[in-house]
Figure 1 (spheres, rainbow, N blue to C red):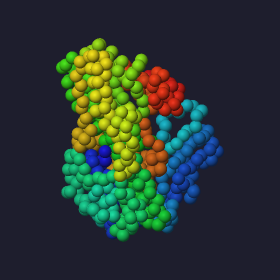
Figure 2: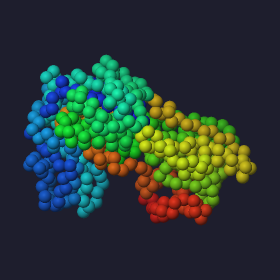
Figure 3: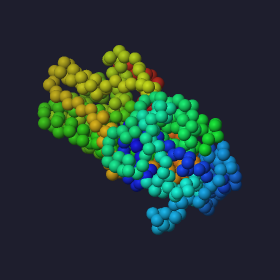
Figure 4: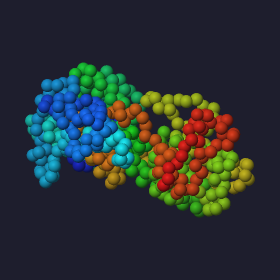
Length: 511
């Protein structure tokens, strides 16, 4: 699910829209603004090494004990002055803004950092830290006319790229003005349209260079962020005065490092409607079984959080937790027990769960879409038919199956209040970062504080549900479903031995 923050760049109104979105800011209204620290990508600080920039700009916070620095790692984002050292800087126009006039501290300090891990032991390393997001006292792009970019920084020439990465070299663009984007936060769907694949880095940067663009904001998930990293690298290689900012979107919430991606809260909230509908349906019949398929290609966060929020779900199946159907502790046994106890049950299923079973039953091979993602088989339909066949043919029980797939309903709705606020913060943080000359970064909340994170850091791994974390244990406690951590001998022959070993060695932490 892609989302658009168009109106956030102009005003304080965010938008949740389904588009792989790129916003470009042309150089006739923005001039690259050095007096700014030339940051290293990773500053590793030992017990006796002070936190300093390569140009001797201090970034160390006040400390009372030198040992506090032990194991402190600062992963900074690239800056334009890394490869354009002579860029001038200018005073940030926000210091004259009425909106910020009553703010006690208008600008974030260059020494401010955000810890990736909030809970550490007394004698453990301090761990990884990122640069705190927010307006900087000096900016590296100047507008003579000084809404985010428009209202805060006076940027008037803003382009929207239509149709994803392909739109760059097919020259599909639209001029974005406050009037055009005034109400897009109230719409679902895609404002700038979307596409799969089409990323040709050289063509994209050629287009950026030809148009004289010097700020690019790219909104998308893991694959889109990798594309943004490639664009930044090519711009740096060519010595272009172009700031590239990534904004993480995916309702799957599978982007690493950040607390959550925007759209996730809205998706979980809307999933409740489908779960409630399934529960009402199965309650009204004898031996009713409702299956609700939710999004989650590799990560089961929507399914897990929707299950915890609902309290009407009896079993949650996600890609991270392999399940099995037959035998002791299997799904068939659990369904039968729950039907005997309650007369009905609801199963929430992430779309990426059980794909190996569907592939085996359909004798299919892996296929991929234009972006290289594996095409998923419909596990919802497969599970519905499998359960029905087992109970009618093997157990000789009459059951009534109800299958609900709200996937595209969830993708198409406008954002809720929580995501509206979140979109605004993401948009403004991205604008502040790009105006301050940072590039090659993704913005997002880390322990509830917005930070600038090197794009490579959020794309090197995917965020997945950890079966050994307390949240999954809470779900198992809530549903009383099998943990599926023990496989019988039959399943051990069917499932990869290495996977079984990993699962069998897991230990769920206490609640």
